[in-house]
Image (tube, rainbow, N blue to C red; front, top):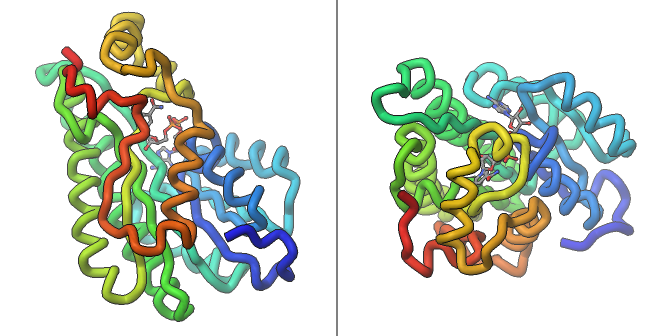
Length: 259
Ligand code: NAD
């Protein structure tokens, strides 16, 4: 999928949700470095506008303010990408929020915010984008950004971990059905990555726990996650469908649980 010399209208198109910053922005950069056009969908219109300015590629970057938990907004964002770029080849469901609280302190509003963004968002975006991929006749690739919290349970993550475990199962459901029309759907489960989200929810105690249970003894970088996502979207992964790849420094393999 390295296509820097194609005319602009023939360049593949990737949609990255939550693409204004963090892991999503690194994923967008991966695609841009390989000559793709990229649509960034994000609820944070201000950060999105700044990122769009900084990328400074008006022909190849489309920034669309969008709350992925709202069906009408997702359909409108999909229509904008089709109108501007004419096709969609890859969708990365990366938009996410985290609330780390004990069970008794996780409010209904916390639960709904986390589930509606992390799970409903991926459901809605895939449902809106898949027909565009199908109509193009080229098929496509969807990657859902899950988490090690969706692979293994731990304290404080009742909403977040449940949303990511459900997202992993959604990946398999979508892979099973959409695979028949040439759309591959996979998930990446990152370990801890230093982003604004990590600043918000990773306390000193949590950081120390991660250090103890990750064989590589460090956080991942946004680029290390983007490389795995890019691989899954590329033709190099053309027979990979319905899989979850943990990019976690060996946490899942080591099997040492978080408290
Ligand atoms: P981040 O908070 O830096 O970025 C998330 C982006 O999603 C933000 O730009 C935010 O505005 C956007 N967003 C939030 N709600 C949205 C909505 N309803 N609609 C559209 N956009 C929305 O976080 P990050 O660390 O870059 O996280 C990216 C993804 O990676 C998330 O799904 C997260 O759960 C996952 N993840 C992160 C880590 C980590 O340690 N940072 C670990 C595992 C998985």
